[in-house]
Amino acid sequence: MDLADLRTFEAVARHGSMNKAAAELHTVQSNVTARIRALEDELGLPLFQRHARGVAMTPAGQRVLPYAGRIARLLAEAGMAARDDGRPQGALTLGALETTTALRLSPALTAYARAYPDVRLVMSTATTAQLVQDVIDYRYDGAFVAGPVHHPGLHATPVFIEELVLVACPALKSLKDLPGLPELRTIVFQAGCSYRQRLEAFLAERGIVATQPLEFGSLDTIVSCVSAGVGVTMLPRGVVAEAAKAGRVSLHRLPAQQARVETLFVRRQDAYVSSALTAFLDILRVLHKRPATRAAKPARVQPRALPSR
Image 1 (cartoon, rainbow, N blue to C red):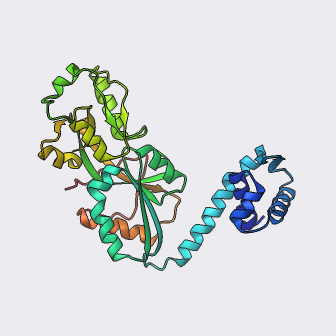
Image 2 (cartoon, helix red, strand yellow):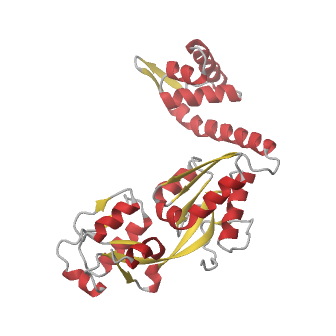
């Protein structure tokens, strides 16, 4: 069993086809078939069931697949570590909440791109639930999510503290007026958004029943709908401060325990921390006046964060 065998096995498992795997691996189908048969002979068990439409994994194949992916990732990380001479370079893939990207990360992204042009930085946005799963699945080197996060395989470092506010149209003068609103709607990101979960819990605690929520993938769209009186949302104060100043929305303070939310940077605890990632986090700390903390805390432990600006 060698790396080429495992890569071939993983490609066949992912595509469910010897032919498609061969195309991805830039080889011929007969080579793929030969490697799979050799691997099956070595293990003494069939890994795939052949059928007219391709192949399907056997129970033995399903048990082997996680190990194949793990070994391939370890070898890739070993190569990355060997080439990492301390100069930030290569690929860096990060995830973040859209609100965090807009409010906190833009200056750091600009400074980083100027300082380290040899790094191929990719930043994607999603909900906390999706970002955490993507980090667990090795799709991102790390992600900025809303805390708390509880997962034994992740390290979490607090980076910001945000104040959440209820955002409504200018006509809403007080939270006491919420129960009297007819057909109250929530304007939210898709399921898995921690701010959405907090809003739903806030309303439920007060016995306020909202109609079917409206889901959008854009922060600007959510704010525009709230401004038009379509519904209410819950967001960090800094994200909607300008809209409130312009009179487009009204902001309503929440009880302290519900208003405070910690933004964490999470990464896999078993993943290699590259020079490219270290440099990005260093720039972020400098811009937000936070001390360097090389050792991240386990995700199941919630350490105290320093106040942000």
